[in-house]
Length: 563
Image (cartoon, rainbow, N blue to C red; front, side, top):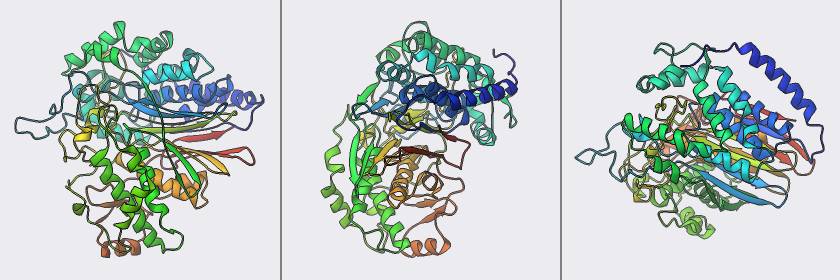
């Protein structure tokens, strides 16, 4: 189906040309430099190319979103969803774009349970039955039409070129392909794109996605509408149904991107703006910061500081499991959960030198997930417009199912619902009835794109990482509050507790052996994780000097550029 891969030499030559063009192209008047940090160099270049051609941060966000759909298909794509946090400089307007996936009309509470009421393994992870209706194409069109300077078709040009000409895979993508090889083999269309004769491709192999290029071109030609209606929607629905899924054309027609008011808070003079439900990120982040604000973290020992932070994590994730879900379907007590007085009550239950067993706060489960998929980018343009966006298709390569003839790899975000209350999903997160499956509902998410602002700086940040996203953003906020800057924030070693399972996990370097020993004496179950945590992307604007700095997490292959 796909033509032979184009030699990467042409793309490299083009990248040099784009670099020179962008470097020279930013000579027009700006309030300050523009900064872009994404999870892949080609996505960063795409965003800067659009900025150089007169686009604003919102046009650049379109370019980055689409480019990541092509070159980081394990983490995001047209078959997935996400949250875009926007700030418009001319009037200070801020909004969250909710492009989260939506459960199809045929979805129901017990759809992943057997006759005995037990969860059927992998049914909500592999194959089209695990896929919600995607939101990324709707978000691309909405960004361009309502906030951008350029036509959608212009901002999609870099992504279309990458899909047609191909890109070389690195060791990280090769490992993810190997991890999901059995599921990819079950989808002939996906296997044709990501495998070589059914085998894991070598590092440097060029992945060409001509069907995806055609789909992106169709989205450009129809201003996004063609994805959700007409011939293409029929192709998606029939392809899903023929492979055992339950999508209908009406599900695609009924999908709507939603604008939501962000969640706001303050921590020691730092104003926090983050995402609202169906993301749990903003509420949990504010809850943790409210708890910690009542402690003098500078006055305690390093080990006690970590203990207090971990206990704040535990309590916020307990509330996540109990109360959070799609606020269009349930009553989420946002005001209470983000109230400083409520946090005082949570803080009162923290012992200064003892872990609080999660079994004392309710129900335990015994598995945890990795969360190395998903993606994030941070952008500011020369006028001060900014975007923080976290995107996902959930598990690496999502459902691993590609609808034939479309190039669209579908998500498996239905696993983010509570298939059964109290039973953990693939990331070890257990939920209650608040996040039960229901037709038209959006599953709870941990994605936490966030803005920070104080008298000195504006910070745009976020990260992938599954259930660990929120705690990684928390540690980033605390690092910034302690005087950290872009480089130190992305390099920070990370640790995490999510209430259940009752386990403290950390990446190498985050805890010393002496700290591990002390935490275990205090009652923690501590485990070093074999992989690194996250892929944070940070852009900071210095309000006094009007200079911009940007950093991409050294754990992965991303790139940050300021021009």
